[in-house]
Image (cartoon, rainbow, N blue to C red; front, top):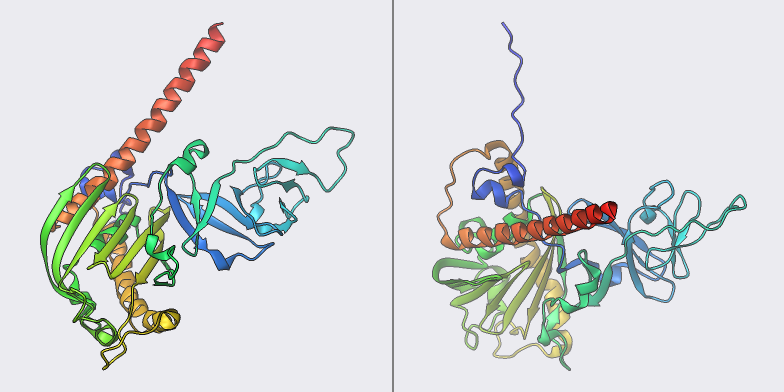
Length: 377
């Protein structure tokens, strides 16, 4: 008798998905948007690091004059990752043969003899890059349209006295759609029963638009844990919250006083790096009818990150990673989701990925037709 266990196949890819849950958990994200990839202060002049977007590796480096550049993470010679090399002036240098590329991805110098030949005409792809809100953002799609595409606009961080903000990032072993579901679905207060960042949530409004889903919950915000001592509940309406999944970003707004933006960086089907921009107009001095002065807000926020925000996020990360493992085992089980907002988030993710795939397929068809025409001529 053969007792050999047959290994269960993994979840289907997007093309072979049989229902909404399988589709959303296999969907990528349209690269024609700005994605946060690193903190501004993480890269000093002369530093290089690797960032990954949906299995595509990019070498991000800051030249010796402080300018950021991003190029495809491979040397055209032997395909080693350029992020394993070093930065010299405004060039990234391959660690193998010392081939040097400029910020546009062009090969500009070789460290060894050329055997009587001209410098090879090699070029790797480059990416548009910008710094904003303490983060580095990359545009992984068509560079010709990069600076025509909007990114999150946060005027509160650009005014003369900007709100307190210290961006946070978390690498989560879960699909990006699970992160969006988690931060927008306020019915999981039970998970946070220790810290109580919110509770008793009731979905009161949902609106689906072409590029976003807007929801509103009646819920108690910031009334538990250490937060209750710092939120001025007498002057802020903390009994409701507005949320938006504004593809590919997610945001929240509590009475125009407590806000956040989230940019997810999809690394692959089961890994996501999430960049949170939490920003607050002010904090109350505990037990006193006073607010902290502007100059102390970042100090207070650093403490809040440690005692409240990071512990709450640790619970969310645990849940998302457990959901990922559970999905991989039970992906063919019936769908049990009952929150209509979550269904709307997932439908938007699927539709946007389908639109991107169709645009790419159309480009390939045009290219094939042009190739056939040229061959016929």
